[in-house]
Length: 150
Image 1: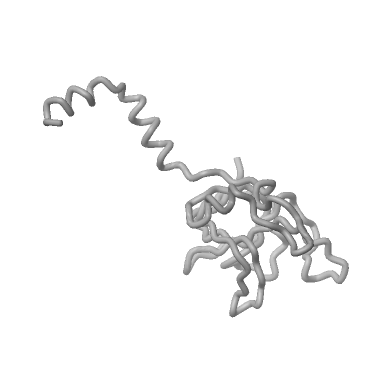
Image 2: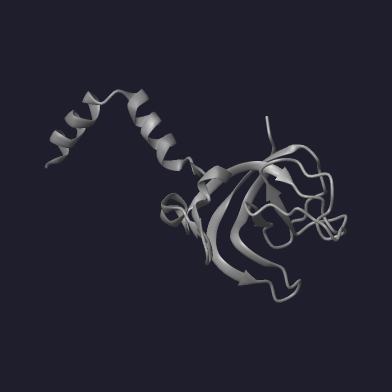
């Protein structure tokens, strides 16, 4: 294809289509809590095909911050529904299985909130124990942005 043919082809595609395609490519996929796991077996939960396909990619999730353990947060737990009780502060905690550990970017901290949050970041799955806190997680989101839910 020579330059004239390329320019002619480009003028046939409306600008709005180009902008829509560019925006669609840049927007992260959305992952819902109901899409984390496929099924529950005697060995535990199995990841869904959707979460396996999105692993390593930038995704967006919406949820609520579980009651935190400290006033400034470099990580927090994202839950489907708001929680009023700190699961680490009770003996009969009903800790939901579908939680996501959100790790803030190095040097960034967040204040606790009860508002809904939109979190965008790189998705990682698999059992992992944090060396510093001992916190074990199955699903992690390495946040690039955290904003209040509209």
